[in-house]
Amino acid sequence: MFTVIGIMFCGIAVGYFFRKVESLQKIGTLISYTILLLLFLLGISVGANESIVNNLTTLGWQALLIAAAGTLGSVLAAWGVYHFFFKERSQG
Amino acid sequence: MKGSLIVVGFFALGCLLGWSGYLPQVVIENDITVYVLYLLMFQVGISIGSDKKLKEILSSIRPKLLLVPLATIVGTLSFSALISLVLTKWSVFDCLAVGSGFAYYSLSSILITELKEPTLGTQLAAELGTIALIANIIREIFALLGAPLFVKYFGRLSPICAGGATTMDTTLPIITRYSGKDLVFVSIFHGILVDFTVPFFVSFFCSL
Image (cartoon, rainbow over all chains, first blue to last red; front, side):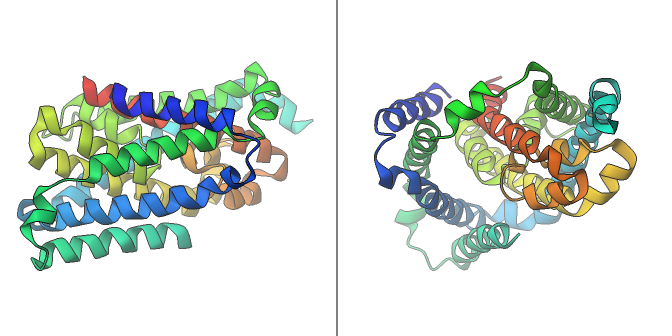
């Protein structure tokens, strides 16, 4: 856990220090490629894992439940915040 | 949407390749994913540190706007915790780790697979990572498709909260369309802030 966040903070420091370097602004593209590479590697380990492949439907249902719960929770909380703190301003 | 399809495509390609059995055993046994993850986190850090708008965004924060990402976080986490009552296979912290991906599917699934390995074992960690990937992709799809419905029943902020960490890029056009243009800045601010929290929350819940 600390390794991952520590490395990110090193990156923040390096990025801030070299923020004037123009090519650094293109880091987003590089990030997308790294993410693709990682997901490809992740896919390999998932695909080579027989138990996951055999249980993909079960995993998918569990994922759907968590996604639905998270979305529902956040829109309910959004309704509360909107209703109590933002409504009068937005109507004006 | 096109971006998410490419990402899913690469994941599926990897799945097929791993499943086909054509890969030499060396590739599967020597896991280089963790080093690629370190590289990714370093790059994410650089992008945050070198962002020229960072100061602008930080200085224009009004305290009240913090309520929006707070609603996203509190709403998502409390309901993710509740759903663990149904998903008896996973602990409440496992469900929280998946939920705290906030639709940032690539990073959260990778983090969970790597960080859960010591406690859950390789098998369950990979299963939970896959759940995290699918769940957070579904959440992004919900945010994209559900925006008009959310506005109608839960108010104009709800598409932003539903979009989680994606509201400064992939779901921004949809949000502007259904929530109104005046909320663009709120949406971007929300996305950046929630995006920041993903590595912290995911690794925190994985360590519990």
